[in-house]
Image (tube, rainbow, N blue to C red; front, side, top):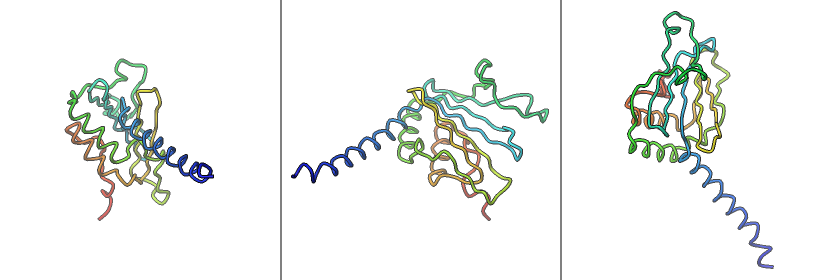
Amino acid sequence: MILKRWLPLALVALLVVVLVGCNFANAKGIDSIYVSYRDEVGRVFYEQKLDLKEQKLWKYSSSSYESNRIAASNPLAENEDFVFVCDLEENGIESFRREAERFGFAGWKEQYINPEICDGDQWDITILFSDGATKTIIGRNAYPSTWDKMYKAFEKLAGERILLFKSDHYRY
């Protein structure tokens, strides 16, 4: 009788522990993060790659930017056409992982879209995990609630802006 009454509660508690553990593993298991922004017609104009495993920051650089023929990085090219920017400090990466965990970065929804605005910000973030899984998060003039906190965490890690804008940059 007691088992019947407590079994559902025990299963719910176990599920909560597993789900919380998965979020922790996801934040701790991040290998790389790609951040890109697109213009009004969907052309990529900004890309950065944070390789947490190799402790490096890369920025996409192409002469096509200057010639107004904007093109995304080439995954088949050496270093995907990214240019090395700087090494990331191991302590900084561990601090970043803790902040990503705290702010639920790996648990962000897959889409943040404000249908009331046509132009404006278009951003994508792709997270590659050590188990081979990937997660792509897209935003169109909308942001997760912890965006500004992650803005600061990225900046602290890289020493420069990775997320180009704070969530309120259009507000007056």
